[in-house]
Length: 110
Image 1 (tube, rainbow, N blue to C red):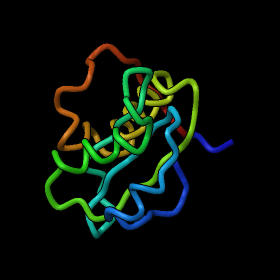
Image 2: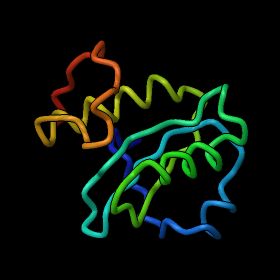
Image 3: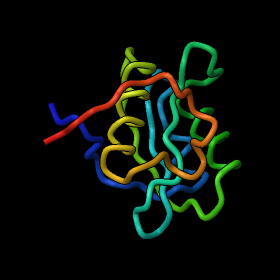
Image 4: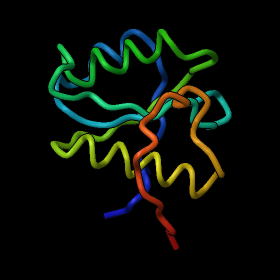
């Protein structure tokens, strides 16, 4: 299993978001150049799982045109892992994750 989210990007539009499963998981939202703007998750309090979490995040994210997701029951651990990877790769959090928890560790991916 790859540590990075490697699924292909999908267009961030109403039809694609409506087809998302009502399951728990994580997602990344990006601009047209593939720059990750937000890393998020659909947890136990997400009314319609990934569908509602991605839609809500999309509304709050400027210049978002694409996304990718992963269904997982360990959404909080995976969310923190993706944040740590982003920090390791880019030196900081995505622009719309500035309020993310500061209590996560460090990764040194190969």
